[in-house]
Image (cartoon, rainbow, N blue to C red; front, side, top):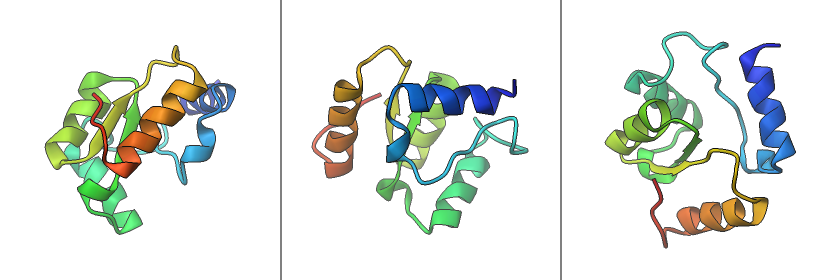
Length: 101
C-alpha cells in the first residue's frame, strides 16, 4: 500500500478529512517537505498568504517547523486525539484565537 493511501485512510478514520480541500503527500510530490519551497508552491496554488493557511501534520521537523518559519498556523496531530478535540483546535486556529504547535 502506498504511504499516501495509508495516510488518507487514517484521516478518514479519524473523521478530520472534511477539513481539507487537497492533499500533498511525499510519495506523490517531488522536492517535498521539509523543503520550504514545497509549502510556498502550495500556498501559490491556493493563492494564499502563509497567514491564511493552517498546516496539520504529524512531524515536528517535516511539517510544523518549516511552516512556522513561513508564518503559517500549525497543528501537530498524532492521530491519538478525538475528533472533537481536533475540531476545536482547528476552529480556534481558523479564528485566530489560539496557537498550537
